[in-house]
Length: 408
Ligand code: PMP
Image (cartoon, rainbow, N blue to C red; front, top):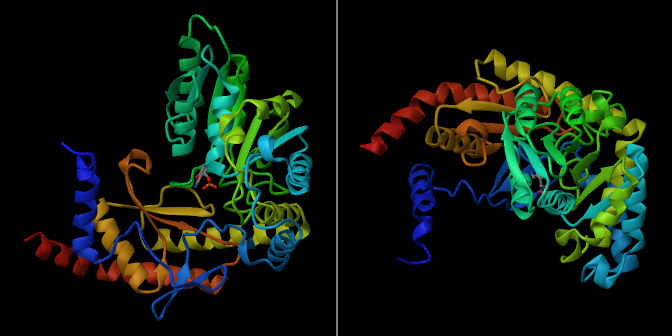
């Protein structure tokens, strides 16, 4: 027995795939990122369609200038936690801007989206509470529940009825009920019926927490996310998000309609015991919030939704089995992870980067070719993406033949 025995399964899966495609599918290295939608590997230009750069703001001139100015003004790092080493003006400005954007009294900013969920979920619940978590919750929500002392009950994905049943089954309620869902689910690209979840949660006297990591910026009249789009934002207790997608930076946030949330920053360990986000990260995100909540943001949203409709139709017409209705995340189900990896690799070698999404990172143990669109994609880019998927259809028999040969 050794420390490394437990890696046998993952090593075996990886070796299997590497034999077929001559590449580590979990370790793609770009030699250059040339902009919002183009990268380079060797001398091949690649269309980037798996970056979560939903609004394309990573190369926005104002966001870049804000980050550079912040470095000039306050340096490259914060060197520690806000509790131990102090809060920068950037942190305060961003928390105010996000609270204003959501029209909520309190906002706390964290160092990553992952830590946001760890901190908020573990900090807001204690041993007497019960967390009800959607079965398809992201890994960092699951990890947040592991860090929490509360017990956790999973309910069927996107099923307010199942949640209702499970909440009703609790005979003796010692503490609080804390319900966690997401807005846009990152793998299938399906969305939650938030109003129904609100009804059930509040009927049982619980709090609703929504991770809008993939929906902030792209849904809603002002880009606040799915709760805004569904007209229920004022009823939601907590909304969490990340800076790493539409906000084109690194960090995360949680806003709340409860002013009491402010005190939680004194107890949340993934907030207390880690370095605060850097002035440049925070300033880039602040500039992005301004863009999202503006006419320019509306035009970016218009574009990404037009592209989503175009791509969804194009892939559906080709006969791909798509996981959900049009949204900035469009995923095609493939028969298994080996075929999926071969197809993913063929796309990459033919100039298109999408995400290879396989278990355990996917719901229902599915293997997916996952596309995340950007407002920076043009109509022509999307036509090229559709064209690559059309060519992939044609070479699928050849790929299968290669697979059979290699399998002996
Ligand atoms: N929540 C969800 C739903 C996510 O998909 C992710 C990451 N993709 C996160 C939180 C974590 O965000 P970050 O990568 O910015 O830490």
